[in-house]
Image (cartoon, rainbow, N blue to C red; front, side, top):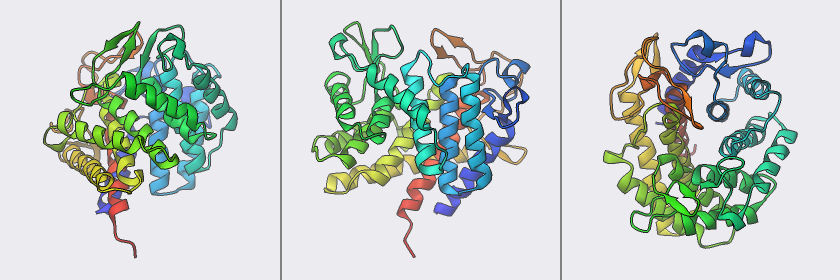
Length: 372
């Protein structure tokens, strides 16, 4: 079974490589993901590039390197990192703490799992995320600089990174406790989006659940604190009940939303493989997480299109994917977020989620495979 998912993950990687990966401005030793396929000229020349989408592309490349280590892919990872900094005006930093957290997570994994080390970048990003903590203003860390919106998509990935990097466990625990005290829906037990000027923003997105699961798993594994595993159990059950009709994780269309359920799949896979098994409830949460990943992955695979022999994934995994064209409205950046293309399958975010899901399915299937 794990070989089946390895083959599907390899196909997803090949599709992104063929359709989206391109040198930045033709420069040797660089590579970024073109944000649309088919692509208009301004996209293929990276007039638009979406910092946080590229961080998830890097994360998927690291997944693939873990699955099947190759010197050529390690070189691609290094090219992706180099191009990211170049396209970001020679800097790792921008105004959005959630963006920086996603890049920090992928750089840390590239170092730890793929041997591509960027210690100064990690230090720079860690300092940004540590210094953004403002409990006196109601946070958490804010979504972006000079903002009073404190949300799960910034605090979750930032805290996962800090738990993994330089053992900043105390701050990661403070952030987890803040989320648990402020952002958990008492009725559904799902994670609210955030808090703005003291008022809850009650939207409940799949990726918010994902990053909180990832954070609580890291802390359950790294600390002696008994609070974290029960939070994982509660949230896995809530996701299964409210965000996975017929066992398939809910999609959120294209644009930024194209990444949301892929991120949830990544961290459900982490629950399935890394939540310490100390109680029957731990085993049950791991099993539920595994089933959600595999059921979603099978649905996404069954509903894919095949273009030139390679998969094209749908924005909604339970529906047949639509093959995009150059016609129709393109994704655009509006007020800090990227809206969807008219056909969401055109967006790199949607295809990255499909790839992320295939890698997650491989990870959980491999963890269940009998050892020789």
